Length: 268
Length: 341
Image (cartoon, rainbow over all chains, first blue to last red; front, top):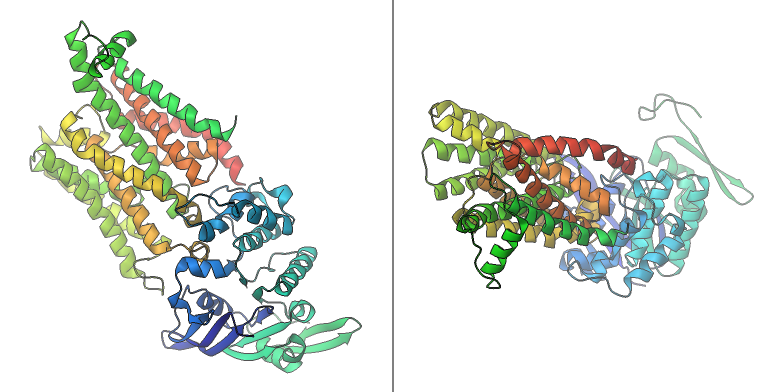
């Protein structure tokens, strides 16, 4: 299968510092990929580059077999949806209004709503269990609910490719599990999902692929169970990590080494 | 009350207040007489018996009311647009220094005793120069890997502070340099704002451009919702964020600088009216902008009506609009706060 979205040898410099070197990742339909790495490893930079928000110093992003730059902004928006970390906007939009903004790239900013818009919006709200909250103020929701609204907006956009920047950060256990199950379903339906996260357990439990970024380079890329080893995890997060097989999966245990971790208090 | 009913109600209020604006003043005109004079102009009725009424109505009051409508709606639309692109409900058209710059331009014209047309041009040029300085400062410091011409919001706010300070200082120099007998009172009066000096000739010159800028903002309003989110979100929804932001700022700048050319520096209409409109129809800009334009126009007509009837000599418009604005703002503030939690 040919990749839908592809990073080819992306390099970024920030002044003198090389923050990303020769990163290549190809995303295919059906991929449910977790993007893992310590803070500052380049996860967000990679996502932003894949969306065309930043141009790499070297390398190229390809979408549907053509360089990203050859697609217009709106054409990209029809193919790639982005889920940022939830934040509170300055104005009291309702949940439905936030989700409706997704229909801009398909219906065109100049034209009025098309017939496809309303089902797309209600369908997305329904799929995230937000129908009852549709007329509530987005700003009045909890962090987890707001995140769900942004996922609904991405679905309403109708794009095949979903890029998500740590959407699980503010979710409780149940919300997390529901989102992961949804992402897995979406990948099964032919979407391509790439989600950055700080929780390797999620990758082991739910994802069919893990991409490991370490100091701006790809440390590993493949099925989570083969890529996420004690060795790679220990390098990734600079703590000693053990993987413990339990009956239904893998249990992950990190042990910080006093004096060797990055400024975080030690402990088990 | 349904949100759909708000705009028609506002339009009706606008028609009503415009008509009332034609009737009130130092020489109150009975409604019937005003109607007859209007009908006569449209070729529907005999000329009114009183020729003075006709002169007052068409040489004096009609331009004033039209100017009030244009200024009120122009400032409200600019304010709502600025609040969206700067993602801050406390922003007014003054943010990028446009009002300070326009005030300086007008003061300069007074000091060099320029004729009216030059004064209008200088006022506009001052406002545009101030925004150019603000945006220029922001861009000079904004090379953080963003798109070309898009310095980002925080730097624009910073640039606006710099340019406001600069043009306020320049304005002070003009006041200092002005002849204290004739010119200084002129400048001070101008800065307080008034529609008393609006003549049909000026209105024909400036009015169409304010109207054009307002229409441009109404057209751009469909982008304002997404622009009010984060840059990355707006981009991921397919918008050319930098270009759009510049377009919105340009239209809002032209509009608000020209309101200063017509009527001086008028308070914070541009800050409060968008809040009132948001309270009535919600934050979605396609609904918000037309309602804000209407409410702004009504507010300005009413303010001007009060300014010219309350005391025998006219109270400066800026004073009345500021006082009225404070009152209304205090009234709506609790409800605005509730919407935000």
